[in-house]
Amino acid sequence: MNNPVTHPYIPNTVPAVREEILAAVGAADIEEFYADIPSSLRVQGSLNLPAPLLSEAELERHVSGLLNKNTSTREALSFLGAGTYNHYVPSVVDEVIGRSEFLTAYAGEPYEDHGRFQALFEYQSMMGELLNMDVVNVPTYDGMQATATALAMAGRITGRRGIVLVSDANPDLVSKVTDYVRSFMDLTIIPSSNGTADLAAAEQAIGADTAAVWIQTPSFHGALEEQGARLAQLAHDAGALAVVGTDPIAYGALTPPADWGADIVCGDIQSLGIHQWFGGGRGGFIAVHDDPTFVLEMPSRLFGLESTDVPGEYGFGDVAWDRTSFALREEGKEWVGTAAALWGIAAGVYLASMGPTGMAELGETLLARTAYAAQQLASVDGLELSDSALHLREIAVDFSNASLTSTAAVAALRARGIEPGVVLPGNRLLVCVTEQVTAADIDTLAATLTAVLKEN
Image 1 (spheres, rainbow, N blue to C red):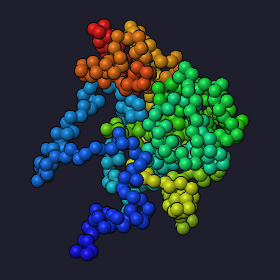
Image 2 (cartoon, rainbow, N blue to C red; image 1 turned 90 degrees about the vertical axis):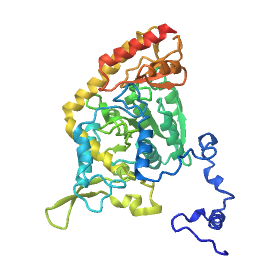
Image 3 (cartoon, rainbow, N blue to C red; image 1 turned 180 degrees about the horizontal axis):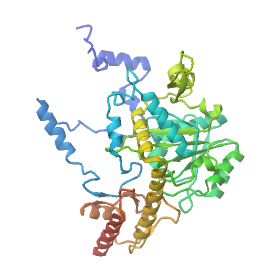
């Protein structure tokens, strides 16, 4: 055949069509498209796929067998965190987000609206109250995207390209932010001092080209930044913005960053009523003050009260639609990307069910459980805390003077039905406690670690 038959759905599998595509984009081969992906992350050889499954029953059996290999946090005592947290999810959350008018196939976009806009407006309002900010977006894809977007906003607002990170941030978050902004912004990382920002080093790094001072609190290791007001002042004195990445879970008890000078607050909402689910449902929030300079730089959607054609009648709809890439397309300041509207509704239901009193009690409980865990783990012979900062939910424990490495200790405790935490560089372990981890659970962890270390 002179003209190869093109598959109606996968046209790039036909060799001639594939060559035509490569020629059009100026690539020698398909490998050029994957140049940024390290070879260590690529699949070598063929995929390990099963033989063809000829019936739905066989497929269900195969998939169930794979899923049954997983051990959930209901089956094992878990102290895993590092970005995905085992907080309690009230049953009402799952009930509401399982309703057909909310549970949709893609990005929470129904063909008809049966209250979704209002539900997201309520979510935004409660998040604004929790964070003491005026404007909160409809959730972005995840907290990493929200952080990268917040920093990009700072670059556009200030006309500068420098980012100074003064906290220990999740390495995955730093990697994602770097990928997002590397073509138009420069990231400088200042090592922490005793878990929190090194003020002297930060002051030296913040300069005339700094667009944002990026503060992560709690840090990747759970440390709460107690010098936030001073860092925000250093940013403002240099003409930069204070961008604070955070988790909103404890702001019923903690002073929100807006109160100590944050210009933009961002992060993930997984802790607000969303299960862990093999990495968690993710949703990113960006919060700003009621200032057009900031609001009009937000690329993601905002829902608010709007008047209709009928005098005195109001509804819920998009606010400042013409600033988004939906309206501007390729001329937009930034592409919105996939929204996580369903998780915004989940977080809204969670916040409504908890209320101000519930969120305050939760924040106090998390602080108390974390302090107790730090005390008990520090009392284990051979273990030391990595720093003396105030921590929320997570603690880094140093095994340098222990009889086992942190990796070996994880293996030993895992054999006893306990997931003790995430191994960190430097022979350390990141231990996470939530309100679902009791004082007795913490005692069990400390006692088991003591026994395992004595055995070796």
